[in-house]
Image (cartoon, rainbow, N blue to C red; front, side, top):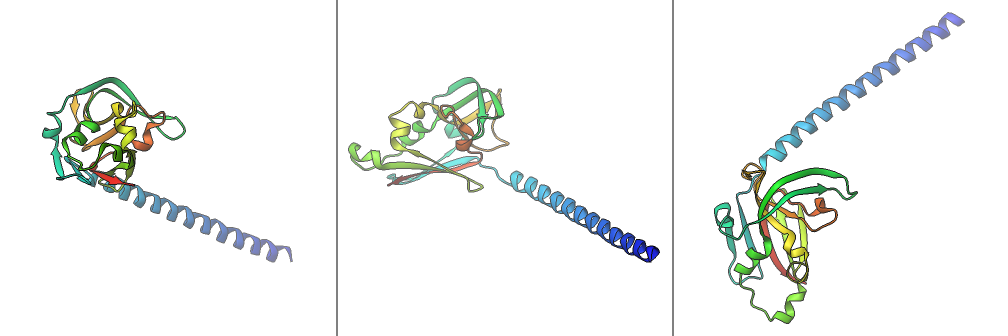
Length: 188
């Protein structure tokens, strides 16, 4: 009786080990495919211009050369943090232009008292979106820190495309937009 029982246990154990090996192999192959797809997806995005549209008299597309004509603002370093406050990246010698400077170029046909109901939707090439209220940009200190980055550490930001940062947020990673494609003015 014991030899048959032991043989049955060994058979089940071998089957169990084979299933685990198969699961590990499948998991590993799916992970490799997902990483490769993620790498391809991230590299396919690139922007070299930003369109301002929506409730503006005339939509305007700004190239990187156009952005370079606006007044430059600089900071020595900027820590990019996630929603927990963990530092994910540090940018050094950041030079950019204020988003409000771009918006000043676009004429909005409305009374100043109505502008409090406007908001700005910033959309990346990959679909990532962040939103600012008009008052947040133009009537608070936040607007001073919302920049479109032109260079980091002396290098032009051409490889990563157009980047929007917010230096004034406590946890600024949520509104860090890589591959900025459009800025749309809307009304609530």
